Image 1 (cartoon, rainbow, N blue to C red):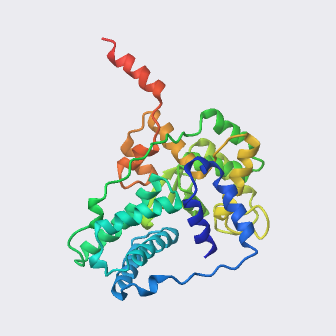
Image 2: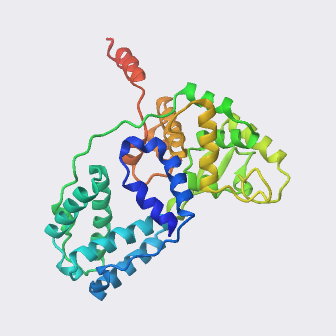
Image 3: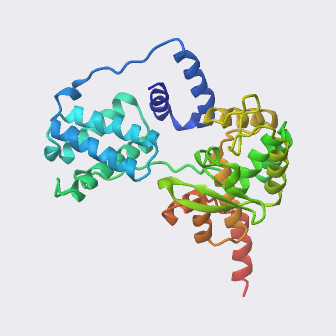
Length: 330
């Protein structure tokens, strides 16, 4: 319950402090150690039982589709609040109900337009599922346009920043983590569930279990190959996990442990906003700018849609300028 509480708090924070999320999360955890959380009873008890039944079915379908427990928890939280707010049979919820819910949510909680669009997507997924199950014939979300957002360019790490992070590593394990994140472009959750047996040093590839429990291959470059082998050769434990804690009993590295490692390295290297997803973005951008077709970058990242891959990649404007001059000089 505490992790869900922390996740919900972080979702309400403004975008400009995204670089401090790890510190804020840790501070909340420290404070929560002094308290016990309980779920407050709400007017959700008055919601039509059939609506709650459909919500439960939808969440079960999300679990079967391979959605993470964190994602399902957020779906449950927001959809339950919507049903509580409307206090209607699910077949009677209108676009006006949704509009007023989002309007009140924004002004009471002062959330960003981007956050509102995320809520809209949560609701849209639920109502589309209801249509698929022939419980509804139309989707009330269709009448609500996404809110305009100011697009912020999320910068990848520069080559200099990557080198500073490498130099700041104090152990072979930390260096192996940095190199693996950059070379493979895996998500944090994917990195943490890797086992030693998932790596083939002969083929220089790793079998990754991604979203929806789908397997894909990603690859080691020369540096990640060397440092991963060095790290594994130094290991004396028998844990099958690829990355483990530095102290006995050397359990599998956790999300919090990974954040601590990256925060420590970033502090020494004096590089801001260092997290696994930024390595993922950096790897994708560097590969794209080096000439890898975007379809192959999409495959490497494990994206369903190529549009998601386009969002991840920041095109090198100097390369655009150079190629324009080269190709237009006739």
